[in-house]
Image 1: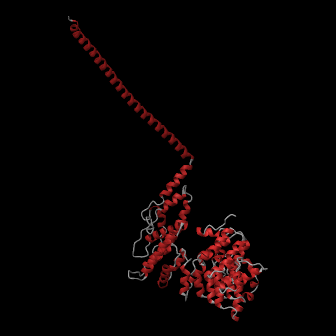
Image 2: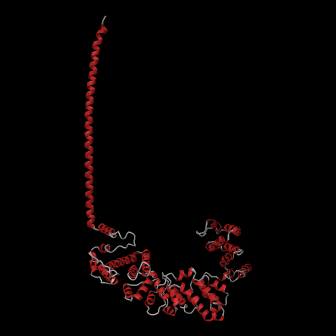
Image 3: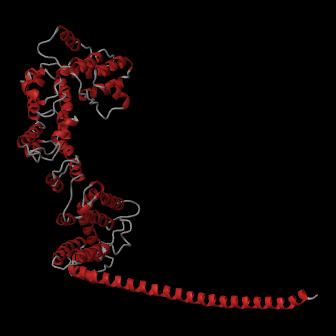
Length: 556
C-alpha cells in the first residue's frame, strides 16, 4: 500500500500517520501519550491520508475519548453516518449528540458542501432555520462559502419577523453574520476580482454580493457595520455597490465605507469633497483619506477659493490624503509655505506633512506610473522656478532645449504655468514621435528637467538617460546590415594586422637566433684553432724531450 501522508507534517508525525493496518495500530497505541496539539494536527490532516475508511474511523472513535473538547470536535465532524445505522453506530452517534460541549454536540450538522443548503430541511425556510438552537445554526453555516443570496434572504426575514417575536436576538444574528463574512473562504470566493470562464458562477457571485449589500439599510447598526467592513465592492459580474444602497446609508455608514482602502468610489469621494455649505467634516476627511486624487484643473479650481476657505482645505489634503499625485503634494507644500507659514507653527507644519507624503509616495510608486508622476513633478518644479509662489521672488525662465516652455509662462500664477508646461510637454512628446529615434530624443529632452533631490543621486546624475541612449544605438547598429558589413571589414583588417605583427615578431626572433648561432660558430672555430695549436705544441715538446733523452740512454 502506497503512503499518502501529507508532506507538510513533521517527521515524527508522519511515522504515526502511515495508512497501513500496522501504522494505524501504532497510532492508536501512542494516542494517549500524544499531546493535544499533535492530536489536533493529525486529525486536521487525516482526511488527506488515503487509507481504508474503517482504519481511519478507528482513529476518530479513539479521539472521542479525549478530555480536550476541540479534539473531540475534530473527530466528530469527520465521522459520517448513513441513514441506516447499526447498533454500534447508533450508540456512537448518540454519544456525540449528547456531548456536554455544544461545538461537539452539533458537529455532525456541519457539511463541507455548500450545495447541501438547497437540500437540507433546516434551510428550507427561515422558520425552520431559526427553530434550531444557536450553536446548531452556527454549525450549519460554518462550512458554507457561497449562498450569499440565500443568507441575505434569511437575515432579511429574521429582521422582519424573528427578531421582533424574540425567536432570535440581535447578538445571535451578529454571530451568524460574523461567522459567515469573516472566514477566509468567503473572501477567497467573493473578493477575487479575476473572473473565470464560468459565466453562471460569475453571475451568481455578483448576485450574492449585491443581495448582501442591499441588507445594509435594513439591518440594525452592528449588523450593517459588519457588512460595510467586510463585503467586497465588486464581485463576479457586479462591479460596484448599488447606488440606492449608498444613498440610503447614514453619514456614519458612508464614512466607514470610504475609510476602506479596497473601496474605490472615486466619484462619490469627489462629490463629498466639493460639497458646499455645512459639511460633515469627518465624512469629508474620510472621502480624501484614500483612493482620492485631483487632476490639474480640479486643483486649479481649489486655488481660486478665498484664502479663508483654500488654506484649511490644503492643510487637510497635506495632512490626510494618502494617494495624491507627487506634483499636487509639492504644490500644497509650496502654497502653504508661501502663505502665513512660520518656523513657530501654522501652515509650515502642514507643508512639511505634505512633503512627507510625497517622499512616501515616491517609495510606493512603480514602473510607468512612477516615471509619469516623476516627469510631472519635474515639470512642476521647473514651473515653480519660473514663477515662484512668493511674488516677491524673481523667477528664472527655461532656456536652451527647454526654451519652448518659456513661451507658456503665465505671469504671477505658478500652477497655471505648470498646467501650461504640462500641455506643452505632451505636445512636444507627440512631435518627437516623428524623429528617427523618438525614444532617445525624448530621453535627451527629459534629462534637462530639474532633478528630484528626494531621490538619492538624482540631483547629480544629469546623464541619467545617457546610458539608455547608447544602448539603443548599440542595438540598432547590431541589426543594421551596413554596420555588420563594416564590422566584418574591421574584423578582417584587425586579423591582418595581428598576422603582420606576429610575422614581424617571428622575424625578429629568427634574426636574433641566427645572430646567436653565428657567434657560437665563431666561438667554436676559435676553440678548434686553440685546440690545434695546443696539440701541435705538445707534439713539439714531446719530440724535444725525446731528442734530449735518447743520447744519454745509448751511452756505454
